[in-house]
Image (cartoon, rainbow, N blue to C red):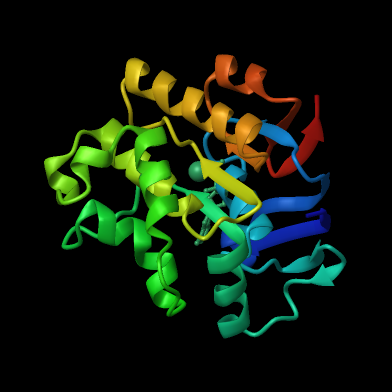
Length: 221
Ligand code: ADP
Ligand code: MG
């Protein structure tokens, strides 16, 4: 899948409260790319990732996936597109607390009324080392395990592209390292396009392309 962002801007508020969170960011993402994005807190990283993944809409600019303009979809169409084609991993895991690990992982399929492929779920759980944790609730899992459940959820619909917003930001350095190794493996072995925001220079160096963002301005290193 070819993703093309052109001059994406996001402006919050007006008058004295006006904030240019993202300033005309353009980016071409090829199938199988591994991109890292670094920048200080408040520089617009999450804003950019939310726009690239269709979680939010820009003030101006365009975004195409294989030539198709994403922001002209209705909200309903856009949510369905995200569920089927895009995986997203959050710093805070964003698991539903009342659902088991397995139910959390299957949620994108259930919302789409699709039957889970049990074989694929087994393979994912083995790969991520969470097979014996599937019937647990999130609060019964460590941070690293919760993030691995969230990674399984991001992969369950077999999307081509995974966006991760500081996926190791809430983890100690050992679990964070494990999570990054898993993500790298998923990029290499499952051929997923991977776009990762990070504060960690070592993680950024794993990527094939490195970008920085400063005051809403995106640049390739
Ligand atoms: P980062 O992820 O790099 O820390 P963000 O993309 O979250 O930065 O935020 C970029 C800028 O936009 C910040 O100045 C932030 O305060 C502002 N911002 C983000 N979301 C909102 C919002 N919903 N309303 C107003 N300002 C926002
Ligand atoms: Mg952020």
